[in-house]
Image 1 (spheres, rainbow over the protein chains, first blue to last red):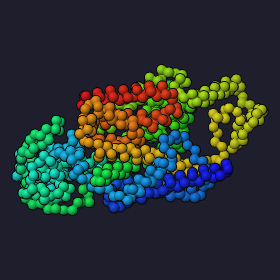
Image 2: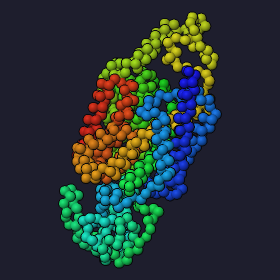
Image 3: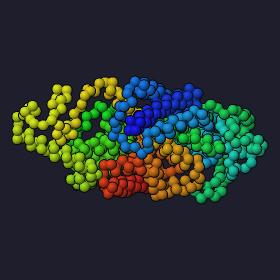
Image 4: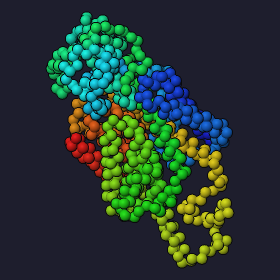
Length: 266
Length: 343
């Protein structure tokens, strides 16, 4: 009887160890898949892609080493440890395995206008981030990206300084409820580290017709000129409706484009 | 459905960003298990209580472990006769004051360098302060778990006895002339008495490179599994809060100077996310919470959390843990509140 129990225990330990190997293996594959398919751009800042690639290779290597060790070593060997754990080892490795498999099955999505509305879109940058190093007048207005515009506006916020300048920007559509019917917000998410801190910035665009023609989350390239307009805005502190004088892009031509593979700006 | 997909994407983004740092931390801490000789380290520790607390909180640089790895290390240090004040300051500071954690914090908050700098400074200050307080207690027995004390006193009395013996009999008597049972081990002869536990001789087989590597990889996988499981739960909580909790609620909590700090401290205690990657977790609150509350999260989280308390119970008496907990919480609150008030 006791021998049977021992055998059972041995077997269960063996299963746990193989679970570890599979967890390492699937995580290695998952990270590698993200890097190869460029889906990683939807998750983290491109600076860290190399780091993720190395991590995936190390994980795969570890999985191979562990697998070989289990095949070679005798299962009686006890892994001595001074670790006191909250979860059982099997629970932890199963959790890792399940999440990695889910990650392989479900591709990451592009953050939507809904997420942007929840995070609060502004034409100003949060105080602590992306402080422009200098007021960039050297770039031609029509070459500025949407983020460049927001950065420029942040450095020198007076809208009249830019009226009449040509603009050519790319972004996705957000319908702000407080805007009139012929206005959309053209927005981009800005990422510093990973999608978790993606921060939406946007510029109001004046359309020639109702925004119903331009559904949310569709991507546009808008060309036009900058003008100053007074638009209704929601006060951040007491949530009352106020008015705000701000820079708007009066659209001359609007081109619908598919969602780009690198939807975030950095 | 879109919401769930968004939450899942954020969840994965946290995991993918954190995984490299988790791996680096685990690889380093596992390799240092073999590279650093704790016994040698202990002989070099200063006796002065304040200096001891300072050094204790900087040992983290040698042991880049996060809060799950530091309790076993602190326990080993205590068992080897390090004073509790050094062990406590090590326990509190090591998860923050180490190169991997500082690096990952820098990547997450590089745009706001003061968060990185203050995280280190405040954690150091708190660890040294609490360590200094406990250095008044020269006798470690009232602080520690009874079972640990038993082992400690047994070893210490053995140690003292041995010392007395050596002083009385400078000429070492060959073990062959002594009575009792002996172990033969690689040319050494070891008496099978209580001193065996203290010496902890390495028995056969001699640790070959291969078996060392086996232990190393075993340790890596074990830590990766434990911390990875924790990371998954923490990331899931962060993603769910970010997507499903109404923004108005989060903002009303997060913009107030006092409630934001309290909320983040509570969150840090509950979430128990590993300190090598907790800055990415905090980053998900960067847009909605005050920076002083993020700082509170980054300082308090590594010191105290639910998982950590479970581990600490194996070393200290519950009363002592409550003291440490209360002191750390108050100091974190005061320091971050002053910071929030000043800037």
